[in-house]
Amino acid sequence: MLLSVALRTGARAQEVLNIQRSDLNTYDESIFIRGLKNSNDREIPIHSQVFERLHRFAEKEGGNKVFDISYNRLYQVWEMYRPVPKKFHSLRHTFAIELYQKTKDIRLVQVALGHRNIANTMVYANYVYSQQELRKLIL
Image 1 (spheres, rainbow, N blue to C red):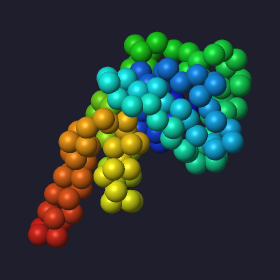
Image 2 (cartoon, rainbow, N blue to C red):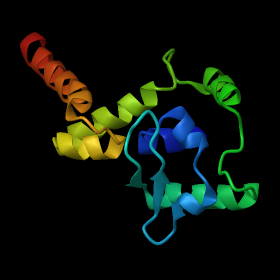
Image 3 (cartoon, one colour):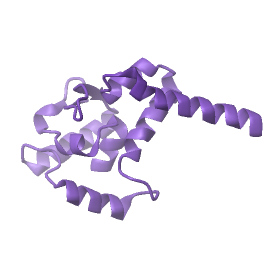
């Protein structure tokens, strides 16, 4: 569930760990993410089925935090279940690239990631653009 939330929100590891039950908005089926590293807070909508599973999980856990584990434990879980030999932060990059590919709206990606400076977000547009151009030229 934790990995799914990270991939579907683009939240950093500690931002996911900081999610509280009160951050789950059942009306909008969204998650309030408190920004870290000088980034903006944001509210990210997620798919209904995923939100329902997350909400049931949070209710079952009973505590204030949705994921009541340490940062070190998160990385142990990541090492056990990661699909590719990359860092946990790659889930944030995947979220951003997929969002940009769907929308072609760099400003929307900026808001979703909580970036204050658009220059930080441009990395994703440049990556998508270069990959598409390389495919055209090579394939």
